[in-house]
Length: 267
Image (spheres, rainbow, N blue to C red):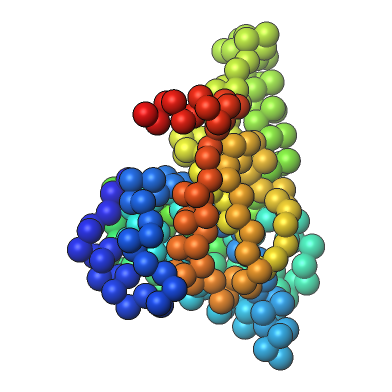
């Protein structure tokens, strides 16, 4: 966890009256926060706009989330950008999203360098349109030497597909004799997930009032704290992220232990 105290204080200086940096325990900021960015379409509909306008508005919220996460010293911010099921949407909307991904990544590269952010993707990227895929590869290459927060985007991702892929890879390794099928461990499975090398999310946030996981990180969020808010993603801002982290800090994470055991370990 790395944060610049001066930049953090300056960032909160103009914060709304209902949030305060003093309310946060900076020693207990979650290392990895993951976001299910939901509600772009409904936000646009409520405004009398096309769905595409909601997606564009969502980019602004995402940029703000990245900046806030960097200021707070998160190690990883991950977001659910496009699921394996999202291909079922209209071709017009899918084409727009693929273009928006490529366009936004190029536009935001200066921000990533300014904030020392390293990009990471998880999902089946090879199935993406060539232009989008190549743009993602450019982003990976240009930020690979950055040493700050990891910004990980799930694109063409689905947890069931991820676990199926991991099982197939393990089966192949067993067939080749490089692994004993009778001795496969959870760590072996994790090594074959798209998210290999990333810590599991401490906090998962879903916007728009929906309370489901939508095939997202089903293995990785086994012990994540879940936070649901009614705000549509385009309206999600630093205040909402602050409230989510404050809620996280007011919970007791037990990982199978009793409340008494956890309290004893804190002494």
